Length: 305
Image (cartoon, helix red, strand yellow):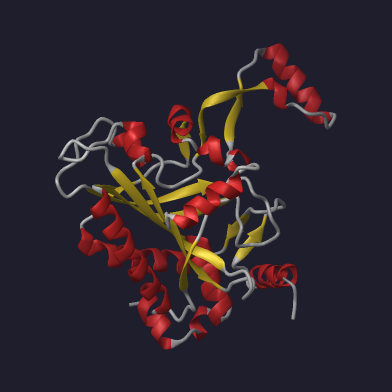
């Protein structure tokens, strides 16, 4: 049996050989070929068709986030190792000459830049909550659908672990009963949708990669309260299946942080679900082969209706 490293390299080599992804020289980053993008767009359309009857609002945000919103989110409290801040040059001509000289000489030049007012968005749902800031929600709450780029600083040779990737996200905000009921309904719906594509998907209780010595306790608490579920598929290995869909129940964290209240005047709860688009596409190639025209008829019917 090959190791996970061997399997991830085999998957990466297969994706490159079939021109599905394009190496760019940095781990965790690559270009996407036309066939890869076609499959991704068709899966995205399938998710939208399944969500459509729910009547979600559609929003689109850039891959950058207001730094103040990011700081208020608490992301740095738990995952400082994953964050990406945006820096830019703001110096004069003398500093510019120094910058050019250092680059020519192969020296460091990061100290010649300053932090900007934006960061790379570490979660697809983060831009939504400030848009509700101070709101009193309608009785039924709010439901928002998005398609956003996300950044996570975790370079890896494993092609399923990317530094920049896309997420088809849905956010539910309302009472605890409304939010939990929606999360449980979508957990079942998401598994069924992936299985309808011939993918061996299964749900499991999960936890986030919390930082530091206290991270294990936070992860244990998250699992004990079943605040996070993932839908996993063996993409790189059977022993460590890949999470292609994630469900997170935030309780009242964002409602408290951004002053969002239910129609009864209570602090709103929230949950989100996100499909990792590139990971689902890779799962399809891993399961059915690198040539979509040879995929099972039922899979093709669902993606090419």
